Structure formats: C-alpha cells, structure tokens
Length: 255
Image (cartoon, rainbow, N blue to C red; front, side, top):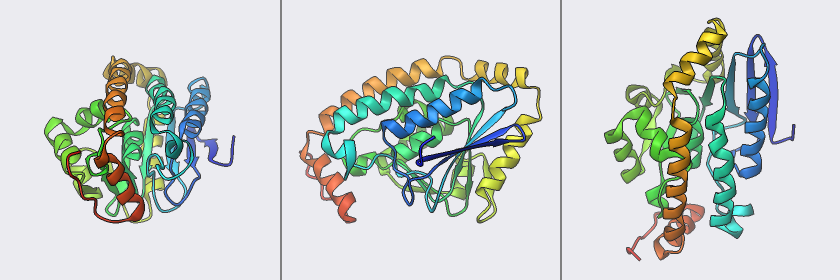
C-alpha cells in the first residue's frame, strides 16, 4: 500500500489510516486505495469490521481545490472521484469512521459512507458546499438525510454551519462520543462489539438495512455532478473557492 494509506489488521478488525495530514485531502487515487484495501478484507473471513481513520489533526478536508487534479479541472477530477466513491457503497464489511477534528465537504461525505461515525466533543462535521458556491457531492444528497433526517440535513446544507461532536450525537450523525483524544480507541471498542457477533448474520442484516443504497447513491452522484458542473462555471463558485483558500468570508452576488 502507498504511503498515503496505512493498513493494519488484528483481532478481527482492520484499520485503514489515511496519511495526508493535516487536512487529509483526498483524490480519486486515495479513495481508490481505500476501496481496494477494504475489498480485500471483504474476502478475509478473519476480518469482521473495518475502521477508517486519519493521521493528524483532522479526519478529512474533502477535495483540495487549490492543487492537484481539482485545481486543474474540477469536473474531470470529480467524475473520476465519484466513480470510485460509489464503490464504497458496494463493500460488505461494516465500516466505522473515527472522526477527530473536522470532516468537511467531501470529507463529511466520506464519513457518511461508513455505517457508524465516532466523534469527540471537539469534532466538527461541516456541509460547507453552499459556502463554496456549489451543490453538494459525494452522495451526501442521499446519505446525510438518511442519517440525520431531511430537516436536519437541509439545515446543515443551506447554512454550512459547523456541527460539534455533542450535537452530532444528538442528531445521530455520530453514534458514539469518545473522551478527548480517544476517538480511535472508542471506534475500536465498537468494532470489537460488531466483530463479536455472528459474522454471517451481521453481513446479512447489514445488507438488508442498506438494500438499494448503492443504487440511490450512484443516481445521486450523477445529479450532484451535473449541478456542480453548472455551479463551477459561476462567479459565485469561483469566489467561494478563492475565499476558502484565502481564509476569508466570501462575497456572493448570485452570478
């Protein structure tokens, strides 16, 4: 595995650690590595749960619009990314996201692709797309309302406000609230609880509960990208992305 993703396994639990600190931005290549590593564990009878974690201060800052593929061509990079992201929903092994720091934008989408999210009080979940001037992506149109309900998802998406760990638990966006500095350990406790249940039953139950989710996400990804293509050609989107990179408040004009 590349230096961007560490893979370890033991006691029926695998840990996939993204290593692009501090923000742990992703691209198509990194998401592809996560998918391929998780697929291998899908076929390993000794692994019954997977933890998705990140090195450093933050869980994931989504795509980096200031460098790499996204800086060169938003649309082409998103098309490649979403094809791989959709494959996360084909995985058969329960997935737990250990969210320290911030899960923002596509990083929130990555966390929402998991079955469970573990946070601490200082964790932040942010659907900041409207504050960047474009439509949400990474399947969030399906996953976020599925998790927190339509009204709470609408609140998060239209305001772009930060949801702290304690509020995330109240909204059911986070399933466990860890003590400070113990997100990874609390995620492991949850993973071991799952691993202690009958594995055939766990996969069957999970498959029933997630029936149709992958197809709905793929349909949503097509719609999200179509909307994003329109928005990325606007002045507001250029201003939102530029303001984010410059760490200032954007000034939108509706153009």
